[in-house]
Image (cartoon, rainbow, N blue to C red; front, side, top):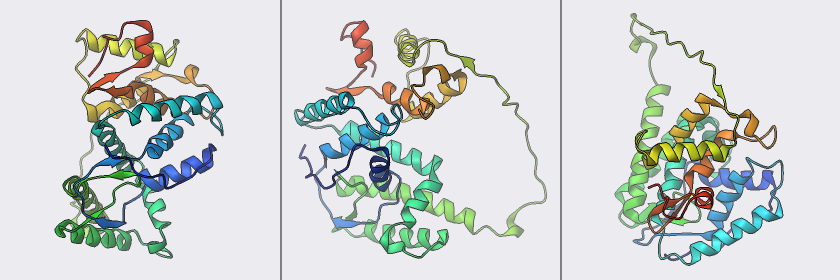
Length: 284
């Protein structure tokens, strides 16, 4: 895999890392580039991503030990011939942000210089839609979906089709006429007043339990695109307040980052699990 050159410099502070992360992963892509059949990822993007989620466990600045750990992980990626799995993961995460943190994505998009002074959501979405559809038909051009990731024209087009579908559905909601709403409307009441179970162990011990249940086939295998939703279900079922390092820690993100593990030779490896068991304990 050809690595992209370093293009940004950031400090290890929460505000700086959050800003760069949101510019990349919580934004509608806009930049047009020449179509390519190559794929690659910048080590600096990997570093930024790891830093961002590390901040869910730290206050304002990542400590030296964590920085050294991430630097070692960067070195591991240099020795890989290719890692398409991590690019797939990044896009799955992006769609999650698009759906569940749309307001943040839209506000970040408004900060682009080309939308300066434009606050109307419909104008912005229609502009993006026109741009995406135009590039989709042009075999010589493609949209740069993420800074630091090079995608082929075919993959970029698939991402564009997802974005186009999302924007079109959003525009339908924004332009609905009051006459289109029927007079009959029925609701179904569901009691969601369920008290979560207080988890008395650590996050690692909870993940060990989940992995063991999966290994014994006592729960269905968790598909790649469902890992985030699965963790959301777990954090709704269990009260993890006792596992937080600080009051600002997002225990859902923290648990998810541990549950992602790491792909090596096409297999997902949990390092904390390997410390307890043997390296043969892998979870695909």
